Length: 350
Image (cartoon, rainbow, N blue to C red; front, side, top):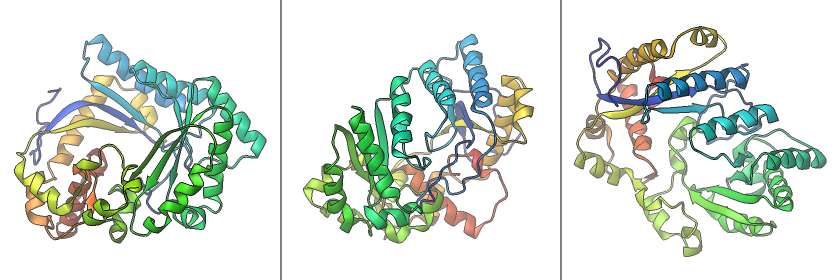
């Protein structure tokens, strides 16, 4: 979607096409310290969810009034669903307003609860339409706990899933695939198979290349190993696994593609010091400001093909799931060679 200012007065390094806005903040504490965490730093902002929801609603109403059906309005407030019930109802409402049903509870990083408290916590959430619980595993037992940075986390997740199954809620299980977790896969599957209830989703996939995981390249599996694991493991690969590629093959893919405008959502990053200011501004005023800042940030980023030509490693057989994962790796190398001061957190390579 072409939108507002076309170049913001900036020298454009990479062309972008703005398709929406992403209201972004972290207001939910995560009690884990996972070594592979996608976001890395976890500063929690002391902002009531109601204030975030009000801003999201304003942008939704703004787009509806103007008939901008293709303009996307997203929000993100943290990687765990340990909300109070009132906030959780508002989260569901926002999803529903955009035509999405939020019916799963992410269990990573939730608070410790006694068995009776946990059961009540799940019953309350089931009563407002949550039908499944999602747990992420890196191996099992103490191996998982070391990676999650939280003693007893494996047993905690198993207990929650067991309690949820007892309430006829479905189970979803995400399993990370790394060099050191491979020997634990069969043992983990044996443990998961002991749980009662219906497993709606059980899927295996490699690490993302973001947050703390950028420092875990030795843990990233190779394409040969990915293709060579036993069939009962490969059957659990996430449905998009045939699109995963080694860096070597990503280089071939990117070099065969033409440079197209980057489709981006403007990122409105809220914190305790700026939310009052944004609450006082109109939607178009916010969008105009963010567009200038975002275009300026992208002006500092070389094209994807240039990054590939300069930093793509055709000898690297390690697997990256997404184009932006391998691009982030190349961009990190670029920044080591050419330090640049810009608002990286406004781009898709943050």
